[in-house]
Every structure is written in C-alpha cells, then in structure tokens.
Length: 343
Image (cartoon, rainbow, N blue to C red):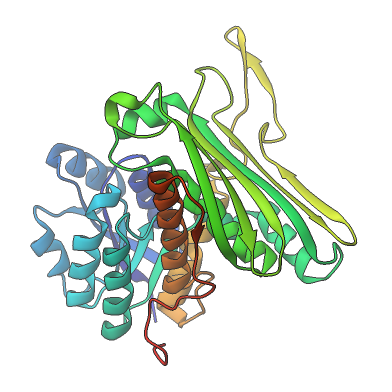
C-alpha cells in the first residue's frame, strides 16, 4: 500500500499538530481538513496543500480517503466516530474515547462491527519514560508492585479554556488511569475520589481530584490531578512512582530536563511531545501518528486497543460516581461491559 490519505477534523492545538505531522510524514498524505470555523480550515489547508472540506458529508464522502484524525471537543467524538464507521474510515481519536460511558461502548462496538481500525491517542503509550517503566516492571526487577503514586497537574489556563466542557478526570485523568494499568499489568478494582471546587466553580467542574485506589493484586495507590496550576508555574507537573517488593521506579517529568531563563523568568520547554528539529516535528506525537499510519497501511498491531481506551473512560466514570456518592466504588476487573465471546 502506498501513502494513506488522511483528514484531520477539528483544527485546534492538537488538530494543527496532527495536520503538520501528517504533512511531513513519508507514509501519509494530508488530503483534507475540516473545522467549524471555515476560514481556519482554509488557512490550514493552504499551509499544507490539502483540501478544506466545506461539510462533514463532503469529507467522509471522499472515496479515496483512508482515515481521519478526530481532534474535536470530547462531546463530539461519538457523532464523528459513528460517521467514520458508516463510511469505513479508520480513526485516530484524541483522548478520551468519549465522556459518556454508553457512547464509549457504542463506539467500540460499532468500530468492531464495521472492521475499521480505531486508536485513541493515549500519549503515554509512546512516552519513552513510561514505556521504560513498563518494561522494568514486566522484567520483574522491581518485584511485585506494593504501592503507587501518580499525578498529572496542568495549568489554570487549560481549565479556563475548556469552560466546563469536560471534567479534569476525563481530560487529564484518563492518561494516568490507562498508564497505571498498562505499566503494572494489573487492574484497578476500587476507587475513592474527593475533589475541591473553587477557581473553576463557575463552570461547575472541580479544580482538582485525589483518588485512592486498590489493584486486583492487592497493591494500593494514590492519584492526584488538577488543572489550576498557577500562571508562570510548570505547564505540566506529572509523576509516577512504583514501589515493589524488590525495587522501585520513579518518573518525574516536571522540568523536562531543560531549564531556560529568559524574559525575567524560568521556563521548561517541551522536549518530548512536539519538539521541532531541523524543520520537522519529532517526539511522542509523531510516534503516535506513525503507529496509526503503520496500522492502517501495513496492518501492524495498535499499541492500544479500543477496549483499553474504553477501560480508561470506565474507570474515570467510577471516580466521578465516587464523587457524587461520597463512597468507594468497585470497578470491574475486566471489560465485562462487553458480552462474553465478543472480540
């Protein structure tokens, strides 16, 4: 198979990143883009030599189109995924799969029924630091995990930007929910979550949530996530600590290993997600999109299945249920939401 033809739907920060990477990728062609703000779509299309579709029907009606990247707001994922399934287009979707559990399940079932490849961009699957942690745990070098701590804290500007369209657990939490199970090879079976509402209460969402959880193996852990970090602080404050019976592994990406002082303040430039080198984007996002293109073009395995992406939404939903009830909530040890025998 030659170059696969891809379209990007939604041209915000992530959509622009997808568009650029596809335009620079040897195995892909950015065939089309779509955004509800047409001048934005036309500007992006001109920049990368693509077609600015004037409607979703026109975009999905492209017979030569192989796949789409869905980079819209989370609440639009269901409708767009269903259109992709209807038209037989493979899908790379920004996380989360959906914010509604029933919609997430329906997307997975429809994708499986239609035979398309569906991958959700849980970026930590392509982060070398988390991949190394997974390999270390799998090798047995830390023994059996006993207790874990993870966090993912983001800036207040991100919380403001989203204006309550999603929760901090769905927007940020799904990253580490998936990573915890993927790195440890274990399953979260119970969660108990508390939150605080102050700076973002006008949008009826929490500022920060802290969860204690139990694993199927008996290990215990704590997870902290927020999107109210002060301005001019770290853009992203993320960590994972795993303590086992024979050792430990620690990830701390707060400073990105580079500290810069300019314009009267310190900053910590991104060196992993979208680093530009020699005029091209490199890093985690490029690796993610490359995996998707290879899966479509060469039938290579996906690093994360649609059901694993559903699992992250399922656990986040249990955390939100714990918030509403004030009680611990049991999490199914496996994807028993799907009927036994389904693939």
